[in-house]
Image (tube, rainbow, N blue to C red):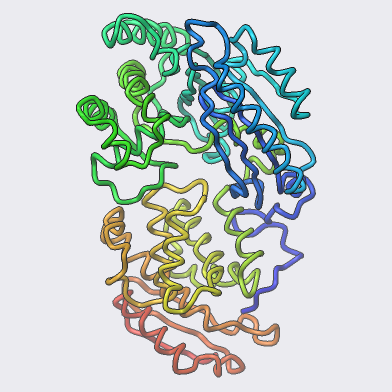
Length: 514
């Protein structure tokens, strides 16, 4: 085994050659985006593998530009002052980070306010920042593209809620279809006359009009926006859900109804503190909850997923060539991590081929997790040995990795934990294990122990291909074939790890010299 890439091989199994060194991807290695919304103004700087970017920098100021617009028709004066100060700061930060130009977009508040054009010019004059004011359908399209960044080829209905508007977009086969915009943002609902009953009537009427235009949407509902994420965090609190990662968090129609009622009957300040939600955001949650309840009742989705990716990620997706869009965000991210942090970049491919006989019959969705684990198996080697296993688990379950369900995060984390320790009991993560069933936990353990053993067999070019595993599941026989020139690598520690792998498989062992 060696860790060197094979330049003659154009493709690596079903995953393709990594693209993060491609000039088209390198051009997107650090991109700055400013989102001027009705409620917040945010700077995000993306870095790393463009297909699954890391958040190099992320800052949000709650300016509430859209507050009071229902009465005045103008932007909130205090919000304008705060927004200008934030944008001046963002421009200086971008220069310090070496970003040639920020891409800035503004949404509902700026496009609807009578003084929006004047404020846009003021931003350009005082900050040197050109702002693109986009309409509701374009906002819906960009938000849907953000979802596609995390879920390539997905299908369903994307719903993005901001302060002053709510957008819907249909996605199917990696493309954005029909799009609609509405005035169902919580800042506008807050000022609506008639109290709760009046809001409910208004929301129902608007939602029925949206449904008539969008048609039947019974697939997955993707929720984008800070208010939806806050409601999801409350849902976690209500359920006692252990993994506080909002991206790919799933809800059902039943749980949405229960959480809306929970919000209505709770002390909002206590709930805000328990869920670590800002005061400004929490003040909008009850109104957004009323919208979500009616949204789910109207469109009846088969399931509901939270997306942390939205308009800002959609702007990055907009700049990607199709060959990059088509890549698996998880695999590209893991490849990038291996190239940057592993002791022997490229060895993950060799390790994957070595452990593959144990998992020859598992379906493709599980194969990609095995591939990801092999790529990540060594990226935490700098951590203290006493904490390396926990560092791996923590990174896999909580890091910004796209294309992972929560159960898949735990599977990946558990495999990496077993890469560094035999037993999983006694860690601070035990409550998360229950997101997997017993067979999945056992399979993750086998993968981790296979990687733990395989990592002992680093080989030079001279001994390449000197070790191979063979697995006979019906006979429960695990065979290791070693060439004579590689036999010395099978030392005491390697033998102990081989036996530990066999024990996890409930297998007998056979070591053969070839």
